[in-house]
Amino acid sequence: MSQSLSLQQLKEAAEQFGTPLYVYHAEKITEQYQKLQTAFSKSDVQIFYACKALTNINILQHVRSLGSNIDCSSINEVKLSLHAGFTPERILYTSNGIAFEEIEEAKDLGVHINIDSLSNLEKFGKKFGHSYPVGIRLRPNILAGGNLKISTGHDKSKFGIPVDQIEKIIALVTKYNLFIKDLHIHTGSEIKDVEVFVKGIEVLFDIIPRFQELEFIDLGGGFKVPYKDGDAETDIELLAAKVKEAFDKRPNPNGKSLQVWFEPGKFLVSECGYLITQVNVLKESTATVFAGVNSGFNHLIRPMFYDSYHRIKNISNPDGEEKKYSVVGNICETDTFAWDRKLNEVREGDYLVFYNAGAYGFEMSSNFNSRFKPAEILFKNGKMHLIRRRDTFDDLLKNQIEVL
Ligand SMILES: *Cc1c(COP(=O)(O)O)cnc(C)c1O
Image (cartoon, rainbow, N blue to C red):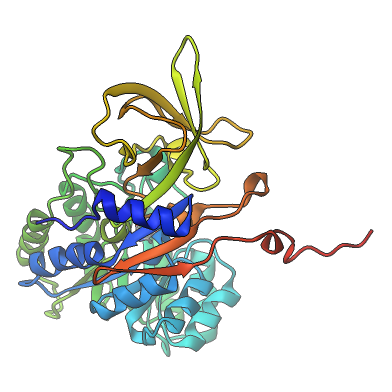
């Protein structure tokens, strides 16, 4: 049985803590993690939660308690992970275009590092030589993922060192006697077709023999989650089988078997999250009927940013007659969540819930229009915990310096 929160639980959260409100369900994260555990139980695979999807410290602690490792996109995420109790050997910093100083800081903290540019690789070699093992983030030149904005491995993407520059990489590795312990690729997000991962492995297999000290291969994240009823998620069992098959077919020529790392973000936390909003106004027009809610892309930017689909439910009137509404926000910019969506009859004051709001929801929120960021709630073991209070007016002024 798939874990989800009931309409009643969501309504209680909204009534107790007000809206807009982010609600997360710990047991759903556990369920997703266990799916990965089960699927990869026969392989030497490690999971690193890509925490940029959702970094509330309680979520990090819950993920840690499950036994997961963690993947970070900034030095501050590394520090949050340490704060959440991850030991350095369970933390991976996959960098992208960062200053060398941040790489040095990550090294001082003792975490795993994937370097994504020739210039930082050279600086690292000059300073640390063979003394500190690192990984290389490669760009495999594969186009995959749900939307161009979330594709990261294609031949025009900024991410990673293009794999066609392999000779330049090898030259640096040789010159500075670098200790390369992993090769990393992350092709994008919402990859349903497991063949994409196999293709990635094949790109890597061609160059693996050139690195003598490799310990693992990091295939990144990007597993797809379902957004609509009947939507498929990445078939993790099939992925596990395909990855095992690919590695069995091409054993590492130096005899050392390579561990495989994955960095799922969305897969672990997308479905655990709900954004509860309340309808401020209904507005009839010739084109559509607008249901204007007390939120906007300042709280959930995904629909406007990359056309993502979020299931919406009227939890205040779940048996009401179905009609079409366009759900929009209350900020002064176009912020359409859904156009002509069938919902149970909506009345002003009703609670509308957005599903799949755990990943890249709160995390990408802002104070645009000088509105407050929502509060966050965690349901765990049937109990509701406030894990971030709603902003207050003081938060808007917190870092401002009045000089006039
Ligand atoms: C964002 C990111 C991920 C996670 O992507 P999802 O689509 O959320 O699974 C994994 N690895 C890296 C390097 C990333 O930047």
